[in-house]
Image 1 (cartoon, rainbow, N blue to C red):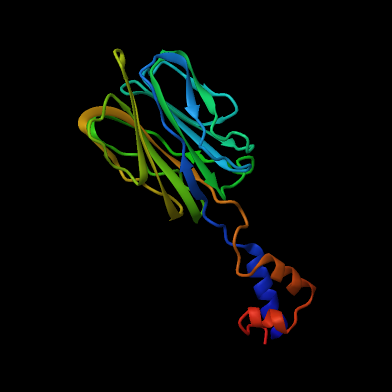
Image 2: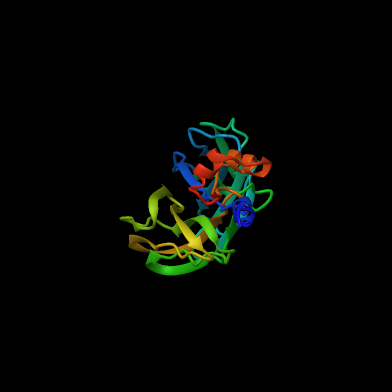
Length: 259
């Protein structure tokens, strides 16, 4: 019986429980009235090697495309009513602290951008963040990021954001730590509302972003995967000792399960 209990315990602990990613920080938002083809988006003040970085940008013209050197695109949304938006990810090297990276546009436009830093996320080479179908809306004060892509049941973090075609007026709604960006100039306004939340299960619907001025918008939802194999019922060092032979100390740590 003792050997059976040990076998089951080792099997369960070896499988692990994926630990939810941790949101660490937003960068300082980039908001400028300047029109340009290159917009200097800020990295967070602290960046550690292996962090997952997500950059979100919004610009005025729906015919303009965007790219970010050193980042991989998650989703680019070109909506005829509300301009364009994009999201990109990067597996951090660890030397990006406090620097900038350009959001490069194919035409001279106004733009806004912000970056989020996550720890405990899956290596994007194994599983990159995913986006669901975008939600374009016309002439409303409630902009709704859509339900996320369907994923395997686990513990995740999600970002819901709305790229708004014009000044949204008084902001509201959203989820945790909502960020509101706006860049006005004579030819139009690039605006963005973004927030995050943790969720468990197979999908997530973010809370809607709101404003006091009726505007067109295109909204998107991103899912950030947890690093595989995080967690478990015992400490890794204890697991190794159990595999190599256990004694009274290990039995005590396991609360008598092996008695």
